[in-house]
Amino acid sequence: LESYRTHLYTQVIVDLVNHKKPEIILMGATSLGRDLAPRVATRLQTGLTADCTGLEIDKKERNLIQTRPALGGNIMARIISPYHRPQMATVRPKVMKRARPGHSKKAEIIEIEAKVSQDNEAVKIISLIREEKEAVDLQGAEIIVSGGRGLGKPENFSHVRKLADLLGGAVGASRAVVDAGWIQPYHQVGQTGKTVQPKLYIACGISGAIQHQVGIFSFFALISPLREG
View 1 (cartoon, one colour):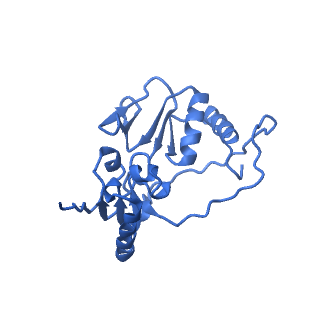
View 2 (cartoon, one colour):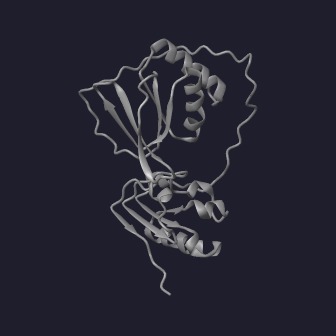
């Protein structure tokens, strides 16, 4: 289990759930979580709400109220799974404020011995080659300068990079310019990209579509320069 393999991880989690019978399972809406969670939900024959931006508990009915963008981000849907257990959801990173540690509360860590069989495993990992890429910590950045299609051409993205360097910030981008190949996908902010919580967000050449806005969970100041003429 040192290296992630979907079928083996699914097998371990499903066996654990069948043994412990939890009412709620939460996973991060990361690349790994988005691959693993639906497979686990299918095996358990339960529902899954993906990319949640809010979670609440209905104590009376013991339901998990799951909030997520829907219809292209135009509405925020509140979803429950009253008829099946466990209730499953994936949560977008950085969409919730970090809670203060509750020193009076203690969680129990239960160690289990995973029993896995690789006899029917169709995929074997021979080696891992990690892509070398620029270190971009969008989700931890306090200042982000993002560029969109309104910049006109790929060469103009250099101005975004220069401003980000001057301010000591990170470079972000809209989906339109990522799809156009102007910049690497790990710079993307929005519904299908990263969720960020900067103190200052500068949007250059970005129209402000809801799909981009849902990726900016909170900020102290947002600046959107306008081009005259």
